[in-house]
Length: 263
DNA sequence: CTGCGGTCCTGAAGGC
DNA sequence: TGCCTTCAGGACCGCA
Image (cartoon, rainbow, N blue to C red; front, side, top):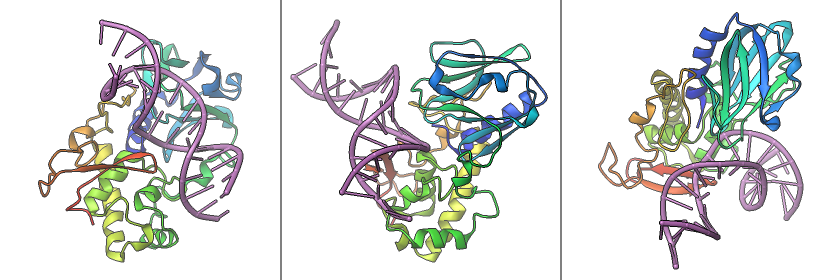
């Protein structure tokens, strides 16, 4: 599922290929995916591609903006339309497809970045606002499991199930541990682990695990799945202590941890 | 305000 | 073999 590293990877590639090009046409095959009037963006030039949390921000001429959320199975990919293609962008004659098997994702046309939902997102893990003080304050306030808090986009932007599991393993913290019960030392370790794991994800171009449909715009998969330490490794040996990795359900999400290394 | 559960959607996997 | 049921999962909505 596209999380911060996957969306960042897509952003970097699209920025390279789309900046300066013109949206010549848009074909909408599934109306609910595309929100807003496509006529407002047809003919506009792409100025810049950015990211906020898991949302892609495509800035256009005339102060128009396209927001894209890929949710679970969305893809932005160059190529020929298939049965899961719901929107087709004609970019100077080249087809950029929005594919989405489960149809949870969306594309929105907006006129300004204020009041568009992005302002409710928490700090970016690579930005200045992501401080130890901020995390201490947020964690101290809630008895929710730490993993649930990590995935709360209003607390921290961009972390989903894969990177929450991996960051908690890397910092030796149990996913079910109440956020307010974390020690200062654990918060320091967790903060470092979040940054490290997300950067690792970006370095490998995101993760394309077995049941996931994430691919890069050029159609190639990412390779971070080869470096998972706990995610989907239930029943296998912990890479650190050799004990069996467990899987539980937490807030409706598959949750993976080592009962020995994580406390 | 918080937090839980239902909802969207499809293919894969499991049960009989 | 094949039909039917169950499940996964990000974010939003309604409710307690």
